[in-house]
Length: 190
Image (cartoon, rainbow, N blue to C red; front, side, top):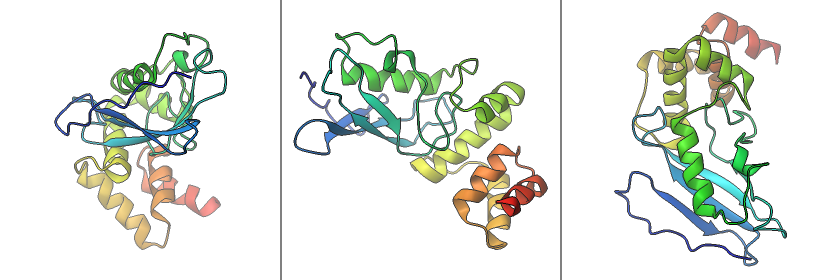
């Protein structure tokens, strides 16, 4: 099995990626990518679960986001990723570095017509500004990016003050276009 060494970890690198071993037999790794500049993900650090199949490098690794993220090609619930090189476009010459850099590129250039998360893709296409604000807020809350929209933060605080759990509130508001009333209805129906 060919696993490339982890790239250096300079804090200043804009396309920062890293890979660490989780277990001693190289089948489970933890990846991390930095949110690309000039995207709603900038400043965030995204953790990835990487499982290496016995058939690697002839088959792609299984990769999913551990860090919650609002992106059309990544499930906001499971972290599953829709990316061709992780499926039918994999080539044995590709490395884990290729995978992580491709995921960074995906963050910078979503493919809303081939979505993993239909709700996110719909918002991306119908209301791009709301999508950016929502993605920025998720980046702040889950990936440590700088603070985002104070208006969205107030809406989250308002529903949390009603006794709802913060993650559930963020998901409800995000999927209901930040409308407090419909988000509250969704929270009460669960």
